[in-house]
Length: 67
Image (cartoon, rainbow, N blue to C red; front, side):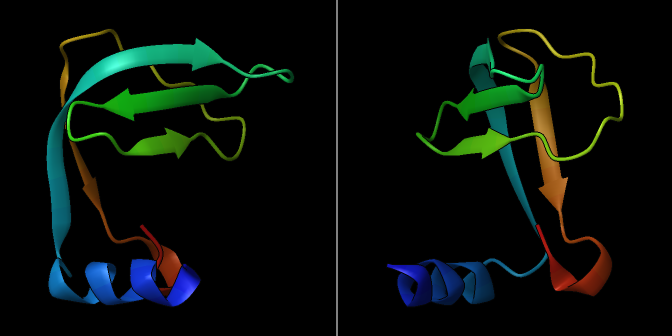
């Protein structure tokens, strides 16, 4: 499954655009964000994020080629 994700990421190298469909808070306060395309993203780190449902988001590549 990991290699499948990497192949998809290579096809869409620059960024992902979607709308937030749900936001949950995990055990240690980090956010779990569900996008309308079905993807789930988990916050890593302690930076404050202000999001609400129906917000449009763009996720782009970061340091060390991470998303």
